[in-house]
Length: 236
Image 1: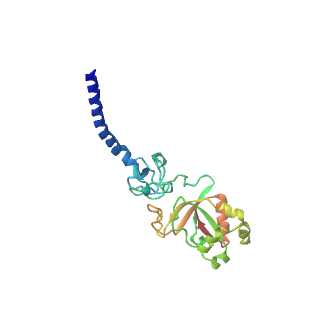
Image 2: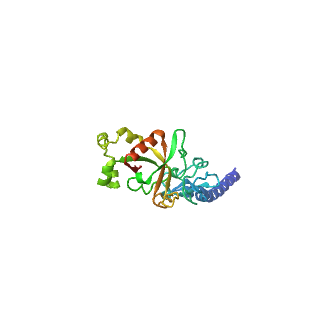
Image 3: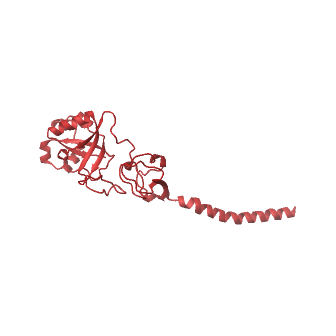
């Protein structure tokens, strides 16, 4: 019996000796790499605009939580099979703004409509990218000479039904000219504007905009544009 106790004792000692390194190995292998990190979808090679993203283009990578871009995708299936709507660079985190999640091809009853430069009031937002959804705010001729685009944008949130009607803008029309997808945002060189890794450093200044519009929106834009109105482009 005493021999069995000795055997059990030595087995316990050996087990404790082995458990320590095993726990340390498990900590180093599984716990520590995940401590303070998050797994996100990251491009492993350059993906050109218009390419369909495949399993060879992206992978899941763990990065420090403070380096995670807002909205970064965390599942490969949310990226694979989607169209890249701007150039993705190697090691760039993939976000919904970089891929076609809503379908940027005109559907039934929709059109891809370029917005003439002379119909744009002020400059389009510098951070505007393909896939953004915008509102067009018609600005009449008299307002174009009395205020800047920045002032018009600041006042747009205060434009009630009565103010819009005083400017000969139907409140219903103003509501209809919302939620339009930007199908292209191009620079003066006719090249697609990209947003960089954080969207705050676009590759150029937006000079031309194309929108996906319905039949009704197309006719409203044409109606106001031919009457001398210009459109302030705003988006959230």
